[in-house]
Amino acid sequence: MVAGVVTLIKSVRPNWTPYQIYYALTSTSSKSSSPDNKYGYGIVDTIKALNASIHNEFGCHKNCNNRGACYKDICHCYDGYYGLGCELKKRGKKNFLQIPTIIF
Image (cartoon, rainbow, N blue to C red):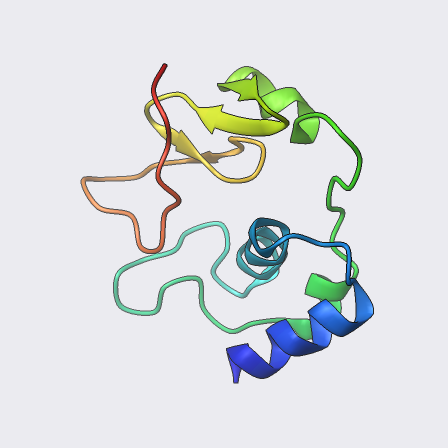
């Protein structure tokens, strides 16, 4: 099901990178504010994902929200944060489907 949504997003938004598609899906899903190890990010909302505000120009998304460093137009989140613009805070010891961060 998610693969079909990804294909639809890619056809409507051909300039989005895989990372931007991932962010659109995870930030607009039913459990985006509190993902867990049982249900992950929850149910995908295709319409919200298609209309998600994704940074398409050069530079880091929302200047990494002062929670990360911008390197080669990608936010590298500080410890304790993740997401396209480091806007999500890690909770507990494990995060489902978190994006690895790079430490300088």
